[in-house]
Length: 209
Ligand code: SF4
Image 1 (cartoon, rainbow, N blue to C red):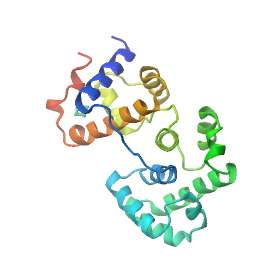
Image 2 (image 1 turned 180 degrees about the vertical axis):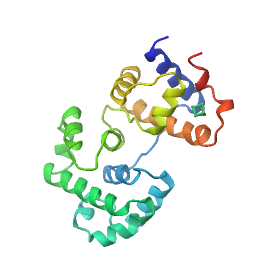
Image 3 (image 1 turned 135 degrees about the vertical axis):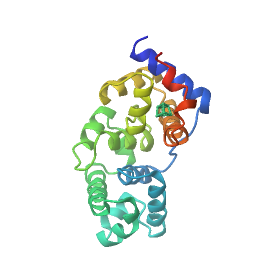
């Protein structure tokens, strides 16, 4: 079996476990905000911060660009590194508002070009950029985060993120719903098995034997 075979077997196990799922189905602005907030923290903290931002009317990029930094920091404090994240949110908001007039304009930009542009924003790495593209803009990309890396390693595939992303893209094709579903399944599996140390029950770790 080669690496692609292992990934295809992993995808089969995830599909058998969860079926196709809808994960992180949210408006573009909230996905972009959440993609920054989720850096180095648990998702539960992001949800709390997003609720606070909604209550304060700060859940859009336009509102964040115009917000008093202290108000923004107060809403996102629970996600950790809140001053850094506040600055990153404001830079990301300014990037989208300055570079693109609106969703119609963003929709015209090819994914590779948009990804390269996003990666020029200070504080936006590959995981954050791919989360925004995959979940916020329904583009053809795959999120390689710590969950993906861990589960792929257990499935017998340890590769640089770029190669891993290409294998998932090749295995799942251009179906953006499947790309989002598969990453969502990985997150669910990590929460249900990896984080609870249920390795003895894990089917993934036997895939490469
Ligand atoms: S449950 Fe354990 S063995 Fe299975 S993928 Fe997670 S960390 Fe690896």
